[in-house]
Length: 243
Image (cartoon, rainbow, N blue to C red):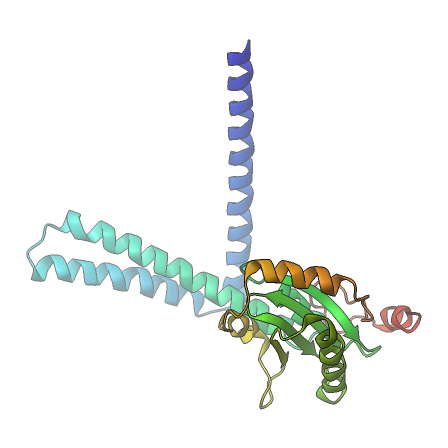
């Protein structure tokens, strides 16, 4: 009886995995179709990577007198992998380009950070949808502001002063998202944070999170992800004024 139950469970699990795999393939294909419509260079670049690496493999087999079936399949596999990497990078670049400048884009980018980062969006904000987001990680505390510089700089200073009282000598980094001098472009925000030095341990990160949890959020509740261009802000702003 137990054996039949185990087989049934294994069969069901395999069915779920196949369904998830089909869904992932469908999503990737849809992303590919959308990117291809907007990015005319995508197909040439992917084909160039695949054919270029394959041609190099063929040349290596001829020059060094190696049987083609020992080299060419490897070249095709590497070329295909490079084509997939190009596709992923261009999709990511396109997504960041569309999100750039929209309220909530910074929070969206931070929430998609790789690794064990603790992101608290909109710990401070204005009714114009400027916001300061707090990130905890091995570097320490990172404050990321998005919005008009003349408004977010005072917000950053105020938030740094507020949290400095409870985190002791833990390093605090701050960035403003933007394209002007001294600012960090949205598409480079994730890599900027990933390059910060590791100053504290994972246990210290947990302790910091506990301390900062006591600080109530005074920021504006921004929507999840960047808001569409031209979206009506009136209701959002009214809700923030009531806070």
